[in-house]
Length: 575
Image 1 (tube, rainbow, N blue to C red):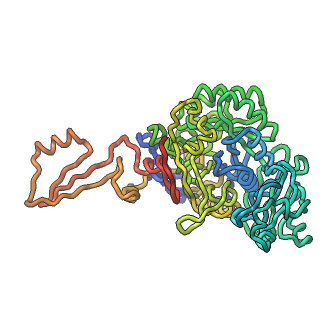
Image 2 (cartoon, rainbow, N blue to C red; image 1 turned 90 degrees about the vertical axis):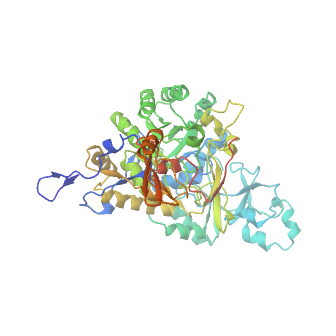
Image 3 (cartoon, one colour; image 1 turned 180 degrees about the vertical axis):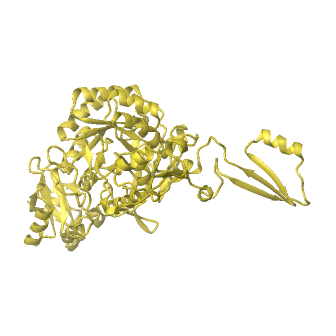
């Protein structure tokens, strides 16, 4: 580190440069390391978070929504783009369904305020719970959003129906036909003004071209969104619409899927694989770049420099880093493969930077401090799953569980997700025996990403300010030059986080003997040979056995990160 107050810069050796800390043989996760503060000469509000998602795509906010079916569909993609980030639509569905989600996200001019509930004209509404948090249920020809809007049933009208038995008849018998709609091209101000002037409680937004229902905006939603903090500059593509990404696999059928996604307007594709260093992915990278040279492709996942180099040479425009660090991922536990996320991000970023390939830190993000660490260690953006799951914009309905509202959150390696096709992500789609690498769980209600992401980004700005970095590029430069220093955090707290000693931690067992005890030298020497990490000491009647850290182990935090963590509840099935 450097002292800047004594005129000429004076080198003071305090803490470790990243090159030294990450060459000690440990697999560090975010909780294992802490940055030492540097020098501040600018306000936090002047910190710039603009960054690159890929070689050719700029973002004003370094946030990416993970391509998971309980995280990113059209509502999340639109919200992240509105805030200056980007959402990657998952591929655990048909090509046509994924394309429809892309079109729905790009059709909006402001973030989704609800996930419209749609039924067919022959359906019935048996319970008020079917409305969820929506003020109405829309009626289309087939029950799909793109099949033509026929009518609407408001929650208030349904509750006011006199005869309960009538609620079991078809909705076509009592719906309001030909409801009022507005074009999806309307801005937020346009819709707010229309609702106020028309004195309506809600209005449906419809895509002018396809006739697809895009959103339902309620007057209460308008007032709520007006109170949210301002995000970054919205992410827009060359077409002036929201920037939206899409995930694809590496099988032959994904080439046909890709064609649909490009036609739907996808701005970037992510090759979704738990282990990206494969012949399948390298061939797909080359195919995408050859067939759609203007389309940026993100490869991964990788955690080593060797893996990264192979994909860089194949032509990727961005790299997704992480293996087994997500809260619902069990890859490290099941397959004994992966890496602590802090080490993975630093190592991969070190080689990707030489080729100008941006890195996406994927997984292990539980708080704003983790975002700071990921970005300073070399990532250009962070991809988040559990951090966004449970929000208003995440797919699925809220359920009341254990005294609080929760939403389902599942790993794409869970058996439940695999039944819909995600097993291809783990190269297990052609295997008869399916082995899970994830769990199905629930996360607590977080509210809207439109509120908590801006607050999280302000915290990130303050973290960068403490490090003396006025931008992400400045943070990277300070780290690589050795000016920024780190230390390994102590493990005492981690030792008790699960109530039992963990491998790689310091712990002691104290045994009280009947009489004062001395351990013979020959016994102590034999213990030293048989168990080199066990130290034996005696004090009067107390025999103290201390297990010390090995010099080449995974830390306790890395083991916690490699298992299931951070969920309200979960169900674990291995096969």
